Length: 163
Image 1: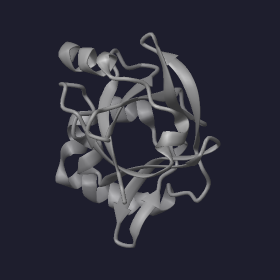
Image 2: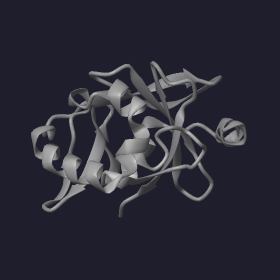
Image 3: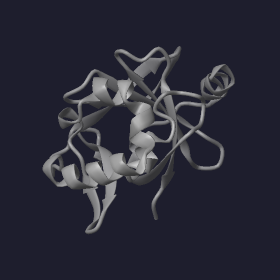
């Protein structure tokens, strides 16, 4: 985790306006408890319409991509049960529950936040004590650090713009 955080810290900031659009997400393996969990459950990525309209959890479904309401996901339980969530039964159970936790409304906002000493774009969740801080990578992707109350270290992920 230390080398991944050092790499994150070395990346330049990103403006909120540079995040407009839909982004495909993937975790960055660091040994974090959430490594692989979102992908296994069908995570697609994130969408940013403007600074006040952000959709933090896009998931693949049989009908394309849907937005999941993060406030309806028991985050503390997810952290404690992370190893079990990487199993086929967990993915099947989430597929059954997903229609009941979808939303059309935005569930986060973009703001400039000082995180780890750098002011950069960050997504502030409406219903959970979570902030995703973003940095620009030289390949056009964005690296995010999900900082949440109750996590010892941030969960790192990469976003690539969907054209």
